[in-house]
Image: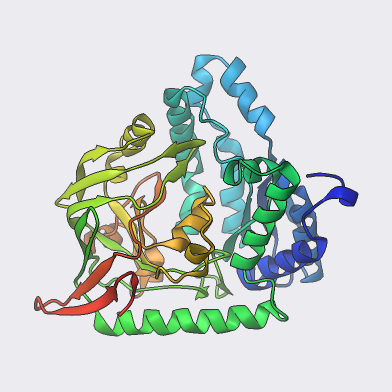
Length: 415
């Protein structure tokens, strides 16, 4: 980021975001350790988060930083076999920390197109190796053993991708404004604003859980998709209680309510309504067809090679692990900004996720074994990748066990 004297990002807003990330996102508990990952470019927010965490009574805050130039050095100079390796020792340590009830925060702010010019085969291999090594730590998050959250920091590299036609300072200022507004930290009392927002999301999940739909039928431009829901599924959104008893907001921002699809009961075709930024590449115009829950045909107008590598990650990569509902009136959709980051873009539209399901999205999920989750239709994979399928033309019907239908969305809005 530029020096403080010329920095277009408001220090006050960064302070507010740090406090919200610690108090609302994590709800960090006195004495609890924090494992924090972020790009080097996000250091202004990392430092503020560390201060806010210690003020909240944190035990030890451990930051783990990544750097774009170091990442590119690997692709330009490393031996070929480097791309089948990952720092498993680091992820084992993170898993051990989570096993001792450390909280987890990820701050995003990477250049979303950093690897767009690199060999997609190497990108896919490195991504797969990393996902395999990270799986023990990811399991603690996917199974909601601990309180965790993701927040975002405006950075120059990211801003240049989102607003390529603006001068760097203006681009960074625009991105910062969009992030702060979407993260609900611009009001007089961000904590109170988040409390009200969580209550609204809870009302939506309550209605859906009362209905106990067997499936959702999505229709719209390029879409005729029936998503069967897992047996004993449970809808969540906003603040939720982790297995360690701490209620947290896993995503800042969030506009979604979500649950677990049945991995073998998805049928039909769907087209992405927004591009997907994945592993430094942009995938546009995704179209897939499902049979018995599995993607049997897939294409993309741009980045198809990356998409195909993603789908070949493992057996579960071609099945769904999440379905989420987001109205087109979402503030993020109305902002009209393509963030090129799933944390934000998924909150602009209804979406589905390939790969790993969340065990917390089952009734009594905290007590279910992996085999029991699979029996109920939960998917298992080394990936979890969200992409958007909703928009102003999206209609959704909830299908009950007896085949009757109830309108859920009409014209992209709650019905």
